[in-house]
Length: 71
View (tube, rainbow, N blue to C red):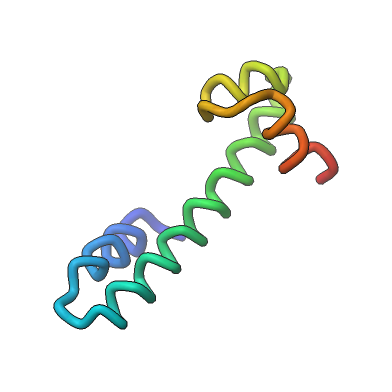
């Protein structure tokens, strides 16, 4: 997903129609999840330890390993 597309979705969260804003928030969350997964994969391929990835994400090593360790 391109940055401009993410920005457009983020702007839509301020829409006056709550249905539009909620749908945009849902899509923004999905985009963030996909981005995080891709970055974690790159970090692991690059040799980063689970503990360091976890620290950067602000979660425990166990949490990040449970979420991404089996992929």
